Length: 247
Image (cartoon, rainbow, N blue to C red; front, side, top):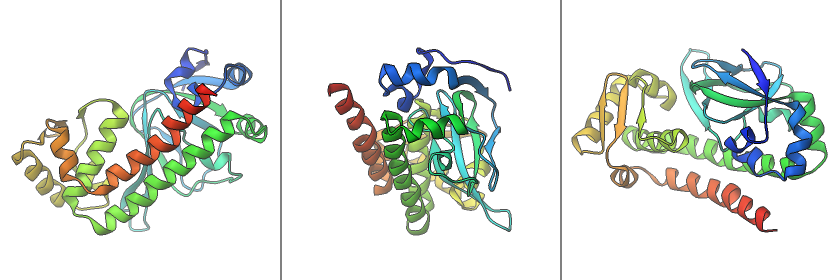
């Protein structure tokens, strides 16, 4: 993986870094690097030592839990509003799950030690990371509830909306087998759910490709989990950023 020095302009591609005061950005700049993360790249593995924290700019990273029998389920999704490797700032030396790039793109990384030193300063970066941790915990806990209590069709709607919000696109290219692995369900169940959504005119899907045709209809078909997560992210991150800029 090739890395290049980050610039002040490049920091605007990530919500956490963009919200920092210019003085903090300039102090951090020598420690920040821009990297291109390919599809399938393992940012960190379960139990692995943390070397870097990554701030996605145009990539999307899945936090995936794997059971002893090999079954997987996505517990969190991180895009340009967040960071990957949060255990670093919480004092942890390992990660409980695997972080895998599911949409290739750019990210900004910082060495673990440099991040920890900046975090101890108690500045805006610390505040933004703590707010993001709270928002991500909401997403993770709501995902757990959703996977336990709601239908495959509702879970698929929630996942499609979350993914497209992070990708800023109504289209995604991935197989139903992959989506089933992220939802912790069976491929056949996801196929049937996708067919029902297509019959209702909400999506179009073919092998390896899904396009959202009716977002409002998809939002109406999903459970409350999508709304809860979206509102919490907005409350914690968007409003906090607006408040700090107005201070």
